[in-house]
Image 1 (cartoon, rainbow, N blue to C red):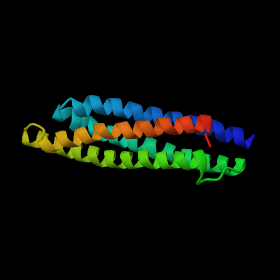
Image 2: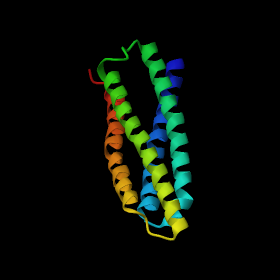
Image 3: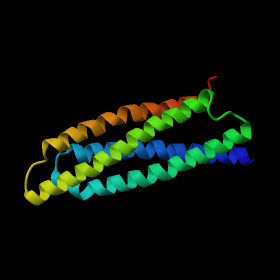
Image 4: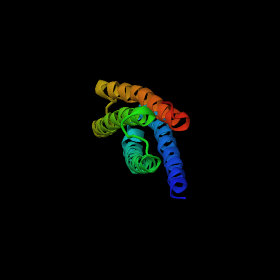
Length: 154
């Protein structure tokens, strides 16, 4: 019964983690991509905060329940599909951490532009492109983790 309960928590947390990430990416693309300095300054901090809280909480739940289930099932943590899943989680985490820093700076740049009554600087646009690009390896890593969890290849 414990294993099934952990599996349910693991599935729900992965759904919130992935769905929250997709939602934040879509909302961020709309707001950050709008190039409207006031929108970015007003809504950007909330996007970063919600994404940060959801991601950290549910990623920790993912790791905790995954390690616990692997222990119960006596799967080795560093080999096979679990090792690959942890590596992909690391890729997603690095993309996420870089993305959060980029978002903080983009919000700062938009606040500076609002205060100065100017357009967004070139640095903002560079950071937005990098932030957008980071969604590709991060999403691919998360989809890879889903594949590994379902099919458990050797």
